[in-house]
Length: 273
Ligand SMILES: [Fe+2]
Ligand SMILES: [Fe+2]
Image (cartoon, rainbow, N blue to C red; front, top):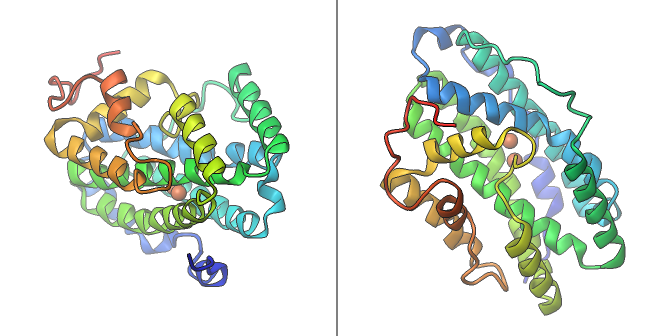
């Protein structure tokens, strides 16, 4: 397998251009209430990247020159996604409400998770294989989520903004996926990564926003035939990683937490908490 070309990747990195978005046109078109709720959740997760990074900095990720360079670019780009999405909401007349708890004050479960992650990383040299696999799953889920939002929300300025964000998310996905492909060549790394994903993976943002908002968003974006087909496509791509054939990911999570295939249960536009 050819080595990863970090220089080429870095050359394409950079924050999205906020001045290129026609903000004055946002209010000319209606934003569906479900999209407002989804975007409010998404901007919070994007802005939370710096907190994820805090726990990653306590792992071997910082010792790997490719990964640490990537993380610096990644944080920069994700932060601008958060800024752009919240500006969109503000222009649409739905400014983001203050967070109920300060961002830095993570719940005990999250702090324990960070601690456990750093312990696993110290004890296990192949930790980066798991980190890269995890990142690939989350970036592809995010990318597909934005694609679905673009399709269901149908707002011209949002379309343009999401296209720009999706270009970044697909570069993020490419980095993580290629790194995972390379690092999972080691059978032990692949076995442990699969075990940890099977046991602990949940969609990005779990435990950051409310569970109700996460389930609402998942239902809004991935229910119905088209949503389900996209979720399956995410899983099919990830199953091509070494050791991940037949892994149960987004579609299985949807089955467990949102309900079985196909129907959105008439939930569009209504909160069923
Ligand atoms: Fe992002
Ligand atoms: Fe991303």
